[in-house]
Length: 232
Image (cartoon, rainbow, N blue to C red):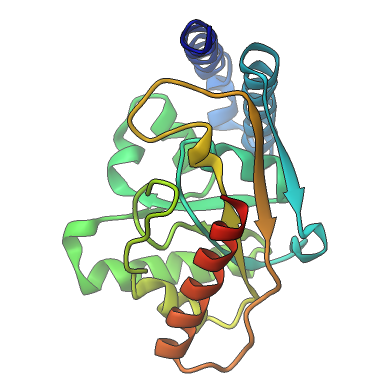
């Protein structure tokens, strides 16, 4: 039954996505705020399908730590779900993502219009400078910039070294809010199965200011990984 519901969700979610990709084409010529509103409609529709068909919902913990203005969101990444839900929780979310996604027809156009921060992983130190400058500009406009510090999805209980670029962004001076979650328990990396239940996502208290970058990188990883283990 889980497999059948998962397949039905996949079919309807991608049909919903494809339909909106066509419907939203005029928004590419509209103000950015319009495409952000459209993104929230797309995400809420997808999450509703997930709830109704699969029986998968979510709960938000630490709402008092959700920023309303400029902030850097450093989040665990276990599932595609993580790339959706922030549009419903933050007022103006933009993602740091790999450059290849911008090249995807239709979908990449919307990512670019939304102000996403693309990273060319092959560019080395130059990529970090470009990321920092694009993030600085987004923060100056009051946006919440989301980075997945491991650079890829990891299975529940697993962890990769956090990228040093996160520490570079910490130096921009915006509040840094760590986020823990357990989405991988229900929406795994390499399977189409979507399991019923309740995903927990927790906004932790902001990181202290003025830390040495190496200390910051270790502390933010310890806090996120420790909180994720509590959610498992």
